Image (tube, rainbow, N blue to C red):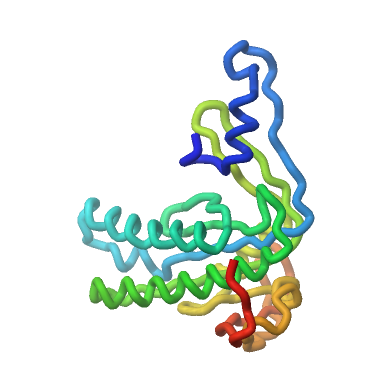
Length: 216
């Protein structure tokens, strides 16, 4: 269960008697007013893997995502899920953290560096597109047998658009995230973009650390 769910959520599930006595299930759902959500996607991965054997495709994704898992652990983020060649994580839940945006920013930059190291090892030329947004979300457990801990809310949708409307090899963040990061990171203003289903959003590219940022 700990391989599927955050520890505090797993403990709550273990205490649920209805899983064994057949009583109506308790809903596990929480509101988090302050989190940062990160989405990352391997650019044109389907084209890259055309003609690749199933074993090699899975091996590539496993190597890349295992590195991302290690980064999430070291930076204090919760991996939410992978969807094909996309990766989702969040900072500030299930245990709230005041520095959630800083954790997410560090992870995003680490992920870009991780892909560069993977390319050096493999001879490939993969690129990652990352998006981050900060705000309120609802988090909870869905399912009865194959549990999944997932997130919902406008903050999640906007974070997803930051990735899908971003640029290869870059980390795009919203104004909300940039404000929470303060002077600890370096930015390049992209400006206002039209995000599908969201509308106009003021965005920035996160370009690096300025030396005053702190790690977890």
